[in-house]
View 1: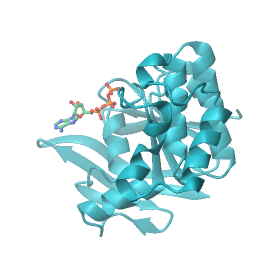
View 2: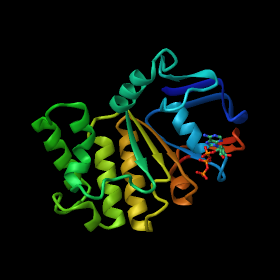
View 3: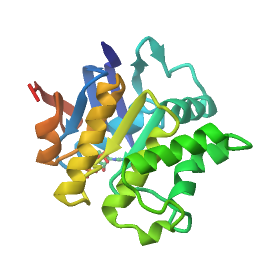
View 4: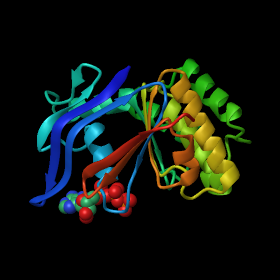
Length: 224
Ligand SMILES: Nc1ncnc2c1ncn2[C@@H]1O[C@H](COP(=O)(O)OP(=O)(O)OP(=O)(O)O)[C@@H](O)[C@H]1O
């Protein structure tokens, strides 16, 4: 059941202790939320568990697998094969179409995009209600952009989904849509962790970790 584990892990940047985590254990199969005030270390936490940042002390375990022994390029490969990311500001390429944005990662890592991947990208965009997938990103609404970003995050079948404030720039209807999709992914057995201040998200979480000044203040389990 436990997917992510950190024990006695810390991150020091510029001689400042940014994260100090005695014991973090988060399960897959449910919506996990990381909350806390600005500057608490939430983004640093995401960077650490995704291997973009090596902890100064301690190790990150995904199931029994530690990122510790991997060099930077191996960690980067592991990340692109295992993690789907969703961001507050979508991080889409404005000059590309919706479909090309969803396929972009694959076009970097494969010399040719297979028909299966293209079909999956089209199916996800359709499932998420994105009209006219050949239109340029700049012509989509914010809600549609986050749906495109969701499709991009899921097209590689990642086992881990990390979202950084995914609802912060959306209206309630679109925010709800994103939360429901993330919950549905968790229900499929994936590991889902969302960084969020949004009460809409926190209310839907099965498990919330509150971080303050780099330390976990409390954790709460919900019946949601
Ligand atoms: N590269 C760095 N060097 C030094 N300090 C850093 C670095 N990156 C982040 N910090 C500091 O680490 C602390 C935590 O930053 P982080 O971005 O993880 O917080 P956060 O909880 O995600 O904040 P926000 O909600 O505002 O995005 C902040 O005090 C920040 O200034």
